[in-house]
Length: 81
Image (cartoon, rainbow, N blue to C red):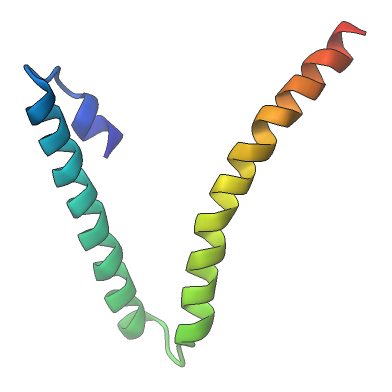
């Protein structure tokens, strides 16, 4: 997605927003396709476990982002001491 957006400079804001929306739609379609494909690939699939794992994965990214800033600051302090 990032490569599709940053491939070229948009001539105006509207086209940049449109490119972002298009690539977000592509990402959602790919995610739904992989979830549908999982039913054929994985036998005895537990949907609650699959969806719980998806939610946890999405939330951990925010946790890593929040802790990453704090950790890098504390690492910088320990390096200077």
